[in-house]
Length: 306
Image (tube, rainbow, N blue to C red; front, side, top):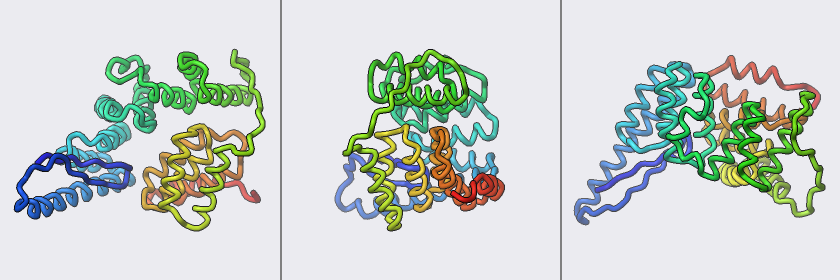
């Protein structure tokens, strides 16, 4: 029997089996074994996230390595190992697992973002691992431009965008960079912003209306799906980070919610109301993982009267 276990989100484990060739009379016992196996994986994985949340990084790493033994090809385990090693300041190992994760899922923004963070902590450029990753992947290039924008490396972001040609994404991100540079009173050679009126059938407005209704009705599972789809399609819209993070927060995925919500802050310019909502969700998320210090930090950021 050939088995593969794949973890789709940071706090959700989904199991599938491939190419089962055992005889019919063996299937029942095989299913029992499979259930026991995934229980062990889930127990170790969730406990690892808990230990990481309370800054017990050594224990978290040990548990994740057990998960790695149970499912060597699981990219989410590689991703979490990279994060845990980075938090423990073991950057060489963090880089190794971050590269593994990105090679498994080149189009995943969070995997690339994690690798950029690890490289930044070491003072290393992306060129240090350029030959080890699918650098020319189109989605990776888009994510790289976003990653540089988040890190306020605007010149690097523009270089990536120049190589992408004339696309809607490149135009929108260039406009975002231009806005950021204007706020800082920096004079850069960036194309001027052209404020185009929104079309009546603007898909971002349609997504937002649908998501707001789902959240107001506490339909968090459906909101999770719709907001993820919206964020994948429009990664420059901070509201979709808030919506996706809120849905994650309300479906027991606090660690992933923190990651998404904190990323959303990087795309905010002048929207204090949305910022307050993100701070509130971040406070809830950090509270749920037992980090009261960070929870209070974000709670204190909320501006009253908005």
